[in-house]
Image (cartoon, rainbow, N blue to C red; front, side):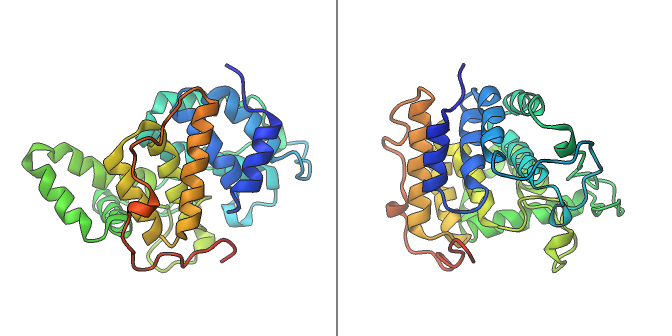
Length: 280
């Protein structure tokens, strides 16, 4: 398997204008299609090529908002995007990408952060906050509510008593553990979050759609396009994202990914859409 060409990555950088997305989207699409290893390492090298050199020796990773090493910030964002994606595409694919990524990261950019360190501990740990099962479920429901809003009632009803495990996993694992941006108590300064993607809520929609579109899951694609609009993305940005993912799938050998799938034009007007334009 070969990786992406520099010309392709340069083209993506000129198309996807939201910060971080030019390296997150191709990383996630390639991982979803089982080609993440060689792509992740080359995407990282391309993303950091214009950044200052890292220190010669490694150091402990501070909270993302206070990290003085630009190349490590790129690495942390790629890692967290892949960790979030693992619940959508499978842990083995993500491990392949992360191990290949680790082969090309210079010593001074290596990252020892532990975003979910407080999970289930129920007490604070350095740089994070402990949360037990009740708190995990609460965070999960909050995350689900931001994406699905009132639609979730109908989805839970459709699942009924036949999918109780999936309902629990959705609340406590998919959202409570993986997808919902990790931060401290409600209202806390986001600069104290250990999650390197938490500063821009729109990045979660980039993660989910980059993983779902290649899998051609129409219900989830519809729900998450709607969720992206509710998250504040403009319709034009959502369409560009979907088209870019489809083009990447073609490069990776999977054609016609978008055929018959929902698009942003199919979605009714959503309250709050377009409020997080690029640069806001």
